[in-house]
Image 1 (tube, rainbow, N blue to C red):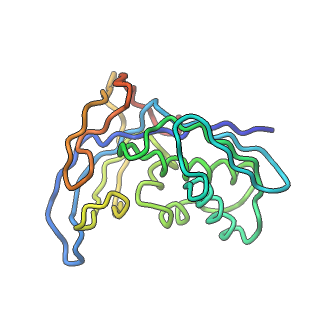
Image 2: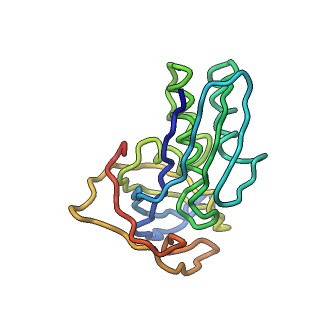
Length: 201
């Protein structure tokens, strides 16, 4: 059986810098929204793990898919072999959370395929600040801390709450403006209209 799951992209609908905390992180307030643009992850049982990709170019050796698999294997205390294929559609470096979404989707797929009784949330938090959001999707408003060097991967989601998308809501890709090296407005590389998604879609 092949498990084929979409790894959704996300938009930051807003971003407010609240100040800097004592540990050197900037306190931010933002709202994440899952959108229709997605990578496609295909996973099926195998005797040993293989990983292939198609679509946009990505690193196969350090990919977040394999990092997530290794983290889940560590939690399960046993190997979780699988044939994994990633069709990459979310542009790397766009700020749309492609790598984090791929990691979260890998956790969900392997947990289901190997019938694991494991809470994925703690593993997701260790993998990255955005990964817990992608376990659920939908829309989430939360407080975020970002390293003073403004490196996107150093962000930490401290608190979050789910929200329902506004009726008929949508978001459009836009040319990004740079703030400390991170795009202020998130883009889809083809400029298409991106429909908002409820949780678990």
